[in-house]
Length: 403
Image (tube, rainbow, N blue to C red; front, side, top):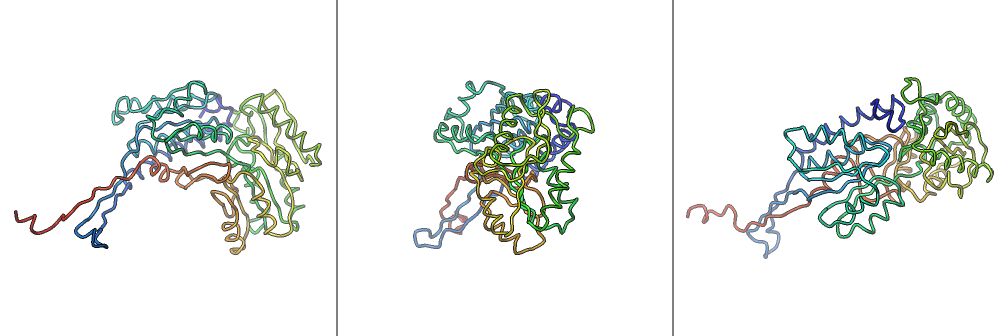
């Protein structure tokens, strides 16, 4: 956890949380490894199939190429390695150039495990250019990538015949339709979802839509709790907001905040940078749809706030995005919960919690520019296997048994 806080600038509390998730991810994958089931089928439903039966079961797809991101360098690496081990696939993993240490530590642990086959895997820190072979080489039978949408879709074009799994982020929205769970409870969740690990999460809360009759109370409490977040040294136990990954990203976020304000948004708190890599946790009100902070992925400690009057209007606003990874909906109305689930175009809809919730056993992935395919251990194992059928003629015939 200390290594993660130093290398990635992740607050020590978030770093410990990621280490815990890393362990759980491997435990879940180990459990799924004994649930890779096959199927027996009678095929005599037609005249041509008389006497035929079949066994179909999954086999390892072959060598897998993996590219992991900087923001969860332990757990998102585990989400690629653990299912490959469970499925029986060899692999080569390229960790993010900015945060390779976690993957190298995992590789060292696995290399010293007597149960791992020798030369069955490689952790390969390298440049993006040198890593192109992981994308283009047809000896790999699957490419799995987590990162930006621009890079991911370009990889898909160059991947050749191999299937591709892409998890590409988004600008996650959260609808707050009522406060049946309590104002403080809801705001605490939204603040955590928007600003944990400095907003550098694919499902960090970025757009917040609040019902007009509770808007003023929610806005006041949101600003109050956001201002109370401590920014500073990620190794300090009280720090919640650490640095963003680079000065370039801090400058980009500052420029996006300025753009939104110039376009008419109201800055409710934050917006200032310091020490080249820190951005104060920022809340903006009524950001124009055409601004980067609304339409693109911020990947930083910034949220956009606005009100709505009709629930259907809020759902439409959620869908007004080129991304679709996860969305959150706070409501005590079961009809609205199902309405949101049915009509929000995203890979996941989280009811009575923020979209930033990801459970490591769940099916996880997006639609539109947010990606292709699903992660989560069971889904990833399925992607790393392919079905093979054995057709059998006359198996079990008495005539064959008595000879």
